[in-house]
Image 1 (cartoon, one colour):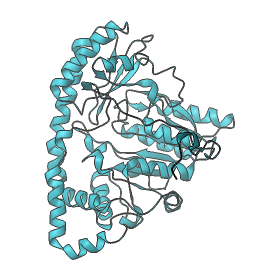
Image 2: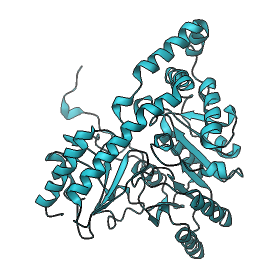
Image 3: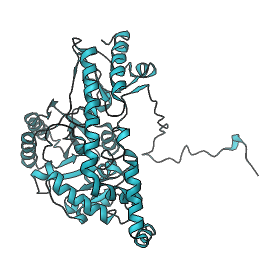
Image 4: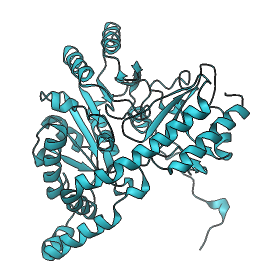
Length: 407
C-alpha cells in the first residue's frame, strides 16, 4: 500500500558525521565563458581516437574482446602504461617502468589518492598562494591545514618557502608536503624555472618534505622551453609525480596517472575504489598518441597561441592604463588578471556573469581561504572560446567592471 508524503521516511538522524547536504552544482555558462577550465574544443581529435579504437579491434578482435570481458588491472591498461613510461622518458626526462605507473580517472583521482595516503587531519600542507581549487577542496576534505606559499610571476619564491617552513617548524607545525603545479600553473599561468626547481628540491631535502608535482598542463606549451620535471631532477623518491591525458586530448576522457616511491604507491592505491580506469578510453589514447603525438601537438599549439594573443591584446587595449596587470603564459589555458588593490571583482562575479562574461574570482584559489588576497584577481581561460570571442569578451568585461565601479 502506498504511503502519503506525511509518512515519508526521514534520514535526519542517520547521516554520517562526514556528510554534508551539498546542493548539485549547476554550472552557468556566460556568452563569453572565461570561467571554464577546458582546452580548445576544436582540437579534440575525435576522428583519430575513433580510428585508433577501430584499428585495435580490427588488428586483434579476440584479444580486445578478452580484455573488455574483465575489469581492468588495478594499475590500468598495460599498453597505455607502457606508452606512458616511454613518453615520460622522452618528454619529461625520467624513467619508470610500466608497473611503477598507475592510471586513474583523471589526474584528480591520482591527487586524491596521494592526499589520502599522506594526510592526517590537522597536517600542514603547503601550496602556491593561489592554486587549483579542486585540489584545495580535496585537501580540505582530508582536514589539511593549507598554507599559501609566496609566489611571483615565476611561481614559488624559494627563499620565501625556506623561511616559511623554518618558521612553521619552529612553531611546532612542520609542513607535511608541498603541492605544486610547476608548469603553466592553474590559475596564474606561471612556470617554475629549472633553477627554482633545483632550489626548491634542496629545500625539500633540507626539511625532509615531499613534493607532490602536478604536471597536468605540461603538454600544452606553445612557446618557450619546457622546464625539467621535479621528478627528472631527483630520483630519491621525494617527488610524487602526477600528470594527465585529459588536457592533452579531451577532459571527457578522464584519464590521468601517477608514479611515486613504491611504499607511497601501495598506500595510495589502498584508497582506490574498484579497478583501473576505462579500457576503451585507454585503448583509444594509446593507439592515437603512439602514432600522432607530435602532429597533434603541432595542430593545437598555434590555436592556443592565437587565442592567448587575442586575449592579451584585448586586455592591453581595454585595461591598459587602468593599473591592472595580467600574466602572459607560454602554455596552458589561463591568464591571471590582477586589478588594483581595493577593486573587488569577487563580489560582482555573479552579476557580471549574468551580463555576459564568466570568470573565476581569485578568492576561489586562495590556499588559506581567507578571502582577503584574491578579491581583486580573476582567472580567465583563453583556450575555450574563439579568438574573436576572446577579443570581444574582454572588451565587454572592461565595460562591466567600469559599470560596477571595479575599474
